[in-house]
Length: 171
Ligand code: SF4
Image (cartoon, rainbow, N blue to C red; front, side, top):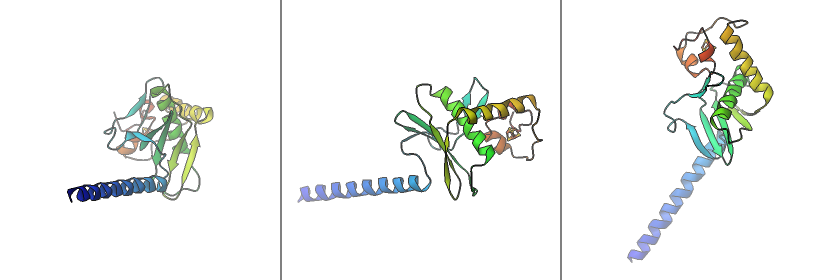
């Protein structure tokens, strides 16, 4: 009799495990989260900021996933978009630069930019990284950069260019 209870308990535990993993799979698919092990993001990194010492860039992507030998940044924006916005592309370019410095033995082939209504795969190209570095340089030298149009220290806190920016609200 006890054996039957043990078997029933094992079957129940197995069913719960399958259900949990299915729900996690569906959540990932719905939000276009890459499959793999999350190595950065809420609950994993405790608000830590990622940093490129070489280029004085910082980043706080919403998630970074390790999938085999690939490291994939993921950024969620709570607005709709029909195409990736330029500022968000630059932010992703900064993430590529930072992650390449932090994980020199891994590949960072692309990142996911997720908007409320859709998501985009952003390829890691020399062009996008050069554009991010160009903006960092402009901000550092304070030329060609518009005056800050907000008072949100939270935006500056998440901004990849804050170490270069004389207008940053974070010191
Ligand atoms: S003002 Fe803030 S958000 Fe704007 S570029 Fe500077 S650090 Fe980034």
